[in-house]
Image (cartoon, rainbow, N blue to C red; front, side):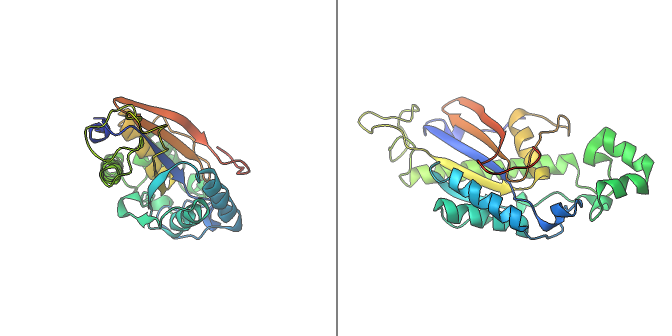
Length: 246
């Protein structure tokens, strides 16, 4: 099942930005964090600030974020730099439970049990004892999208239509007669690599872990919805000055 974007069909072009948190102290130690709460590193704070400047002119109306510290702080820094409203922590954006690999480096996990490691390579996190299942992750991703879509529709009803309109019945072109050029209209979700994989998969209809989508620290995915046209505009990009493996 793919996501239902029909509530946005007559609201003009709306941009959804999916952002991974900046580099955390746990990332510096190369550990599998899962739901361990680790603050941003100094590098992660710099990445978040640069990302906020990139998103400053994207017309973002609201931001949802994970309740975990590394994601919440990323969202707060991005919103501050971009001049956006305070992000709203959302339980469904929390990182996946990484089971028995939590707190280990991947090298430690490989050495601890080669057999379990082989299952991980074959099945991804569905092969790790105690990890959140792909079924549960997909369900959470769908709930997040429902929240994002409902929020965008509500913002439109409050008079923030992309094309300058103020309610239902406007043209889906994003440029009603006499309104001038369409203004950017965006929504931002800040989370973690695991749950973000499933936010992407929920749109494309994927139901398994593979293929995996690369995602660096403060890596962004940009999806646009314009009438009945739903497409990925840009995949796995970073703000100028943000470096690191993607």
